[in-house]
Each structure stands twice: as structure tokens, then as C-alpha cells.
Image (cartoon, rainbow, N blue to C red; front, side, top):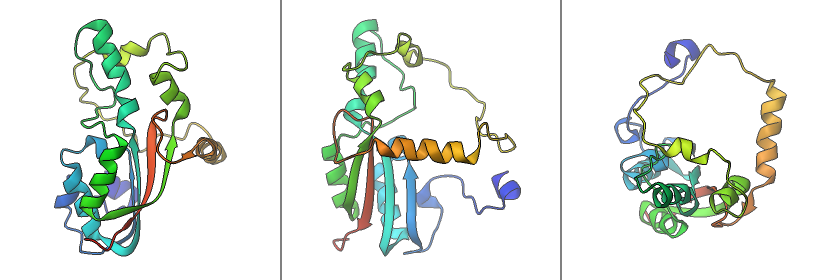
Length: 192
């Protein structure tokens, strides 16, 4: 559908099976994906293989320490396992990233923390929303896709650009436990 409607070269499946040539990309952008894949190390190793030596990898991923707080709190209060509302398989802590990047051949150029308000809610420094547990109760998976190609934008392009810039204003350099997400700008290291 995306191929025909938007004339894009779309490949579905695991990146390791996409068969991109070595050193093919100048830039790879991965936004909230790594925590969902079955083999994060293999995923990043494949990114290293297909990115040029002078290329850049942007990676946005949840701060596992903060992201897991509500799952733990739900379990403590409800005495039953919680469902990851976002379908996360992994909850990476910052120390894990250092090792993961080193073993897959990347070095960190910049790192930032964002999602400060939501992160502070998870840590209970700010009050939680009253219905926060709703998303954590086990549910049957939905078979419907939420991708709507023909859907009109709800707001103007200016609005979306403004919201993007607004969220970037709250990014804080470095990796901090009180933020919900980590942002990395990576470059291939010479070690791999």
C-alpha cells in the first residue's frame, strides 16, 4: 500500500533481511524502535554494516529505568503482571547503551534526555494522572492497523513544526533518570 500510494521503496520485516548493500546509507533515523526488536544487538550491528563510515545514526529510545517504573508500580499495587502499554520488549538503562554501542561499532557524538514532564510523573515527583493504570491491564492484542494513509492532517504543517520545536526546547544534554526518553547522535567508530 505505501509503495503504490506514496511511491516509496518500502521493505517489510527485519532489517537484517532487507539486503541493503554495505556502507549504503549516509544517515539512519531510528525513532522508538530498538526497544521493540527481538535482537537489539543484531539490529544495531546491521545498521553499522549498512551505514557509511562517515555517516550518522540518530536513535531515540525510552529510558528503561524510567519507562519501567509504572510497570513495577502497577505490579506492587495490583499484585498482577502489567502489560507494557507500548509493547516494549526491552527496558534499556543508560549503562547498557554504552556497552551496546561499543560492541556494535558506534560512538556517541551527542546524547540528550527528553520527556521530562512524563518522566517526572513516572517517578512520582509530579502527580500521576488518575487513570494511569488503565493502560497496564492485560488486553487482547488488536488486529486492526492504526496506519491511515488517506487520513487528512488534523492541524496545519505550522502546528506540527511548532510542536516539534517546542518538545526539542525541553531536551537536556546528557542522560538523566528523570527523563522518559534518550536521544543519541551516533557515528561509526573505527573499532569495527
